[in-house]
Image (cartoon, rainbow, N blue to C red):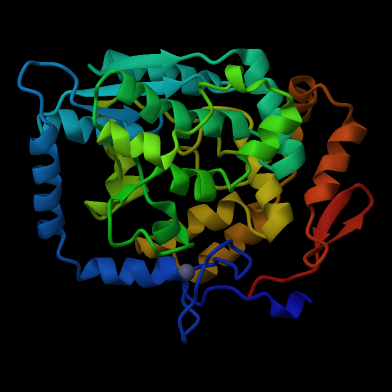
Length: 371
Ligand SMILES: [Zn+2]
């Protein structure tokens, strides 16, 4: 079966990536989009952004937009743009992650210290753990609860505070590979969040976790009807400018106090992205078992598309880093999920794609070769 798998001819996105499309030259939709962006009329999108901001700009000093942040590069960058460049008054909202890292917690403090206003939402650790555990088992998404809270609670609390505009970071489907149905609009709805970002798994996970509906306020998305009654907008910032995560990192480092890890992150060659919590390494390891690509493939694709890496260099990095077993975190994971190593490995086995991997001893080994 593995002969059906193929890689983008420009980056290393795999045909197994959900919702991805390829053109007749074998280029994935992210690489096609990267090329289109070079000749794109960004000025007209800047006008669209200014019009949107002007329509929401407060004249009494109250908050006029919301940005979900984690202390990482992208949310910080957007908050900086809104405040310093566009003169808006953003309220930033963070959802406390499970297993926060030291550098992630420091980055939140540095962000506040750089002059930004922040509300921190703290869902019960017990409920969050149950949803993450159920997400790991039922959906192969080990921080499902946190993800759900970021998608659901941020717009919900914006609405409750009477703020009508929420900016999330990038539209990852168009930018990194996936459906292109949002490439023509900055706006989206809770149903898109549920289908794409939560992989339509909320009900399954919430039921498996055994959380009563009344305890899910932080996690349950508004319905599209409830959302339209709020007369608010959820937008992707990446619609309005040439999205470049590396540039965001440089800006966040300079203006928002962002610090990076000293060593490279587990499973990749970078040290400045997704540093906020320890479950990300498991998330990308599961992604590798499900689809055959990991964190290094994602990072290399970004670098190839911004012209900073050749495909050959990327192949070497991906061969070295992708699919690294997150050994250094295993004890942390077992303690967090309240599982034995055997129970934990049964879950990994459940998600390993038999068309791409075979088990050798206790580890899944790829039967494919990147070309
Ligand atoms: Zn590509």
